[in-house]
Image (cartoon, rainbow, N blue to C red; front, side, top):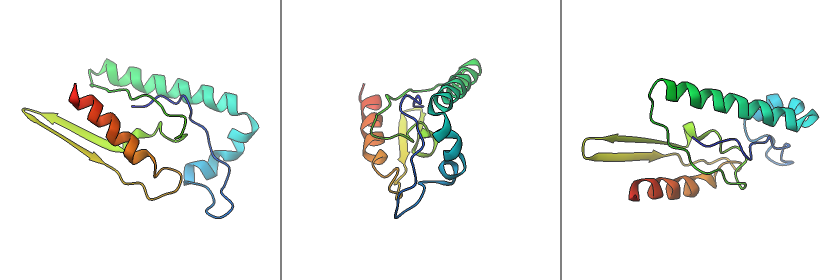
Length: 116
């Protein structure tokens, strides 16, 4: 998981529009009160983390990068499975301009995680 430290909604790109439907549907609310939006994001993220930990689900936290404002949604950027003597990670290749840079960042974090 990645905390929403830099989570924000992007204004629509003049050529490409919004990066995703969630951004498009919520940008008006965000633009009116970015601080409230950020506080709600942190609250929801912390609640999810607590819920997973209460159920003894192992969670790895990656450090947020200011470069990727949508990075909090790491659920769709990679999946790592660890079993008896086997480790495999599947990393998404984002084609959308708003998220394409996350692939290399995610790969680097996974390499750090499993090299220790």
